[in-house]
Image (tube, rainbow, N blue to C red; front, top):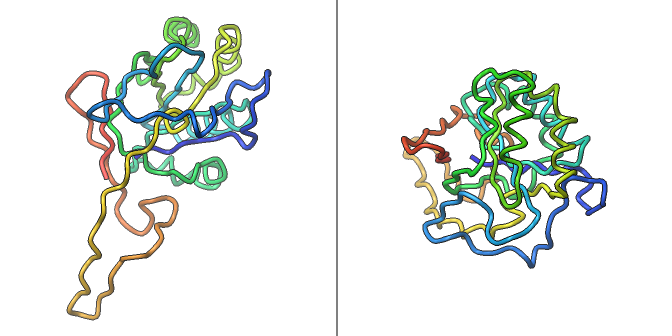
Length: 221
């Protein structure tokens, strides 16, 4: 499940690290619908985050996106309570195009799924915050929350703009779903009902299966 987090002010400014390209510049997904970096030559950086083992890290990352103007793509692991813990903070930053159902690889990894020191995270960011990269970070450990300033400095020194995946790519059309049959025991059809946020509200959170292929995330409905 992909969640596109946007800063409240999405207008491009020279001192804001996140500014969305115009809708007319979006392009079709590559063949097979698999991403590993942004196309062409440019100044864009797609910073994505996933997991969410620590609720406080999810909160601080989201506050960082809001305060610094970062455009982030969240890949939600719905079985973790950190997402519902922070629903009120996330809700105003979540784009209407909730639900990025595309297999996504990456070309850079902050490697903070494990516990790293602050210096290690900064050194890794120097290596992977490069033009047209898709970078993965993790919402699991707190050292990254203490180096946001240094990460922003790297992005600004390289004149990069953070973008979400949906800023760059056209979303494929959603498959048509048949209305659920009405149950014999007085049940009802879910056809036409609007899904609440979080999308798993009222039912068991979906689990996102990890691909065996190195460096891949496979969102599961």
